[in-house]
Length: 134
Image (cartoon, rainbow, N blue to C red; front, side, top):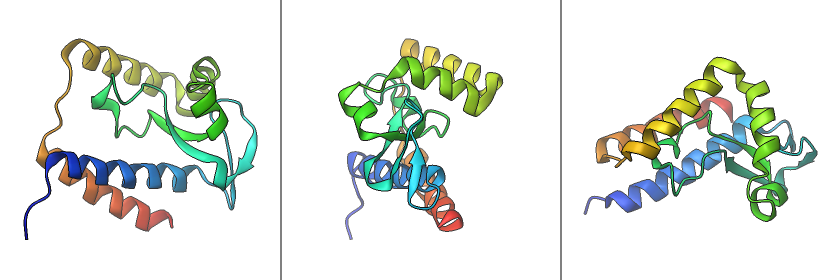
């Protein structure tokens, strides 16, 4: 069997990561949007990234950077980032929030190229985490 390419592994990891974030932030069949704070049905839930995946590839699979977000805030309000920022600070605390900002600054300056081993390892971690909470 042919090994998966790095882009295929990243796609698989993204799917598992989004599944994990949704499962982590779900309460029954509803969730509270990290941005607008509204309680919404699971069917309106996205895994919304605070620092976008395109510019901050090193934060793509960072659990502090992705949270349950309603489709409206994520898609139509482009993340609704001012409210996201305030609520993220309250959710993860000052230390983790500052750490996330420092990582974002580093990746913005230096870039980040994912390695095959890193992605394969993350896939296995996510499978275990999903199994634990579902």
